[in-house]
Image 1: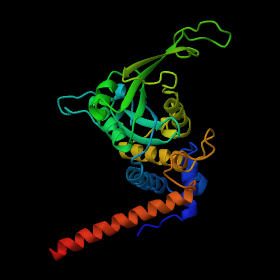
Image 2: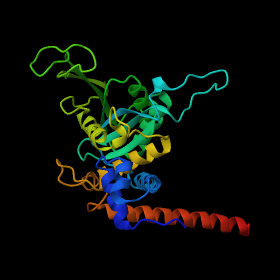
Image 3: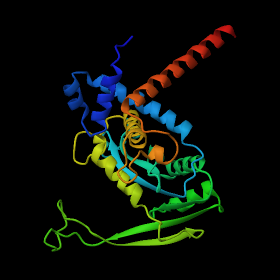
Image 4: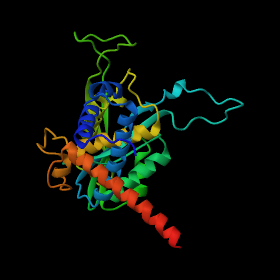
Length: 307
């Protein structure tokens, strides 16, 4: 059997990763191999995915927000080799990918997410997953991405919810002294001028309808998950590890980190958990998940032999 890290050391590795430390730096800090760190990411991310899928159900959300965040895996889509006579198909595991996520605006719980292309198939699967996790009437807010009205109607129907969009309007890029910047590599800062809110289905409260909470969560992802850092080398090299790393980060966000506005974790605020987790609890949850998984394999093999 492979030599496993102690629970305490796994917790330290997870803490470093979720603070934006690159894998190579974590390996130097704790004197362990990069393959071991990758295994911790994959296993913990898989366990968090299973736990969230089982426990984030029948959520009494009053206001939810959906949005997408861009990142690439392997390389930018524009830099991928074009299909040739020998290789006719593009590599579907590399290029541009999007993190689709949904947040409860009141508890800040990110209860659904999906990684895939920004296409109809991924959007439909994501919105259907959101619908399966909430109960009762809800107010939905998105940006003006044209796919959302179709997906929302298909998943939610026409009754029991309201839906509106918010479009943020930004001005011309400005420098620190207030003068307009030249378009180019350093184009300055675009200040938001106004936010246009429109009702699409039902009668949403336009005074509270916003996508700012999910956008602020995406800022946290961009700042603290190294794989989403711009103009760096920490981007994901394979899709499965990318998915596991996002699931791990959002698991820590929901269960471990104290939200400054709430003064508790989103999972506790939403009533999913009674108390805040520590990272050791996440390690224990992962070990329990793989024990159940191994037991299920053994029982299936034993049943096959008996049959």
